[in-house]
Image (cartoon, rainbow, N blue to C red; front, top):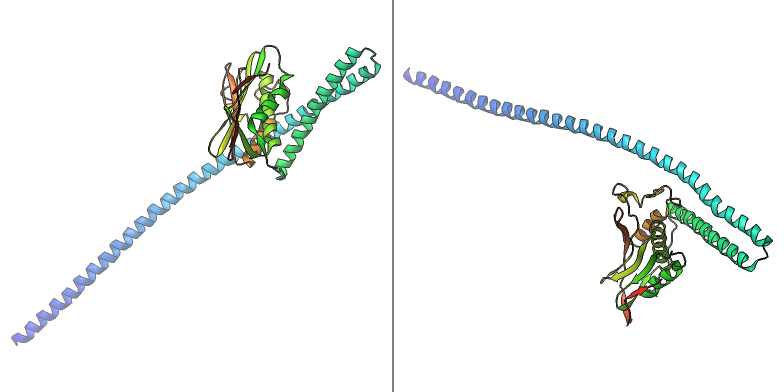
Length: 306
């Protein structure tokens, strides 16, 4: 009978071993389930925190967008009010001095009236051009027409054109490389940007100088206008290229010129910037990609225009 007892004991051992293995497997599965559940809880907690943070960010962005919209609406309202004034001013001058021109018999007076009419006509034309350019930019129809031209001749032409508007206390200086360089760009748009820089410099510079310069790189050209004017406050420096923004609200203009310049330069694939210090002048510059070609050597690299 002893072998039956032995078999019974072996049977119990086998049963015990089986249940121990099952228990261990169950514990492993339970631990795994608990670990997965813990990971799930941690993940859900993280997602909840991210969701709360996202809602906060969306609320902040919504408020910021609302503030931007309100600011744009205010700027548009100010723009419409300002543009009506800016249009009426040269129109009134043209109409008024045209009547005086008809009535006057004195030759010198008639010449003076004609010059005033011509200046206001140019002012009005520039205003209309800016508005048309703004409309083209908004609609995506601003086209570029490239041609090859001399960069040295370009800066000289701009200086000569603006020379008549400079007071005796301000000098226009042209600074350029010793060699003449040609570039394949849209000359009309480059001229438009630089002339706007110069006209802005004239508004804010009562004495000192305005310097028009360019320098060449291997695959780009940098053109800049530097003045010794009143400069731009640091809190407005990063907004000067925004639409409808002006450094000084009392200065004539509708606040879209620099924004248009920025759009033109960016469409050329270039960049635009400003460096300024209050009461120490400003420097506006553009860098446009191209491959300048050295064509000839010039005698002078600096010209004093007035």
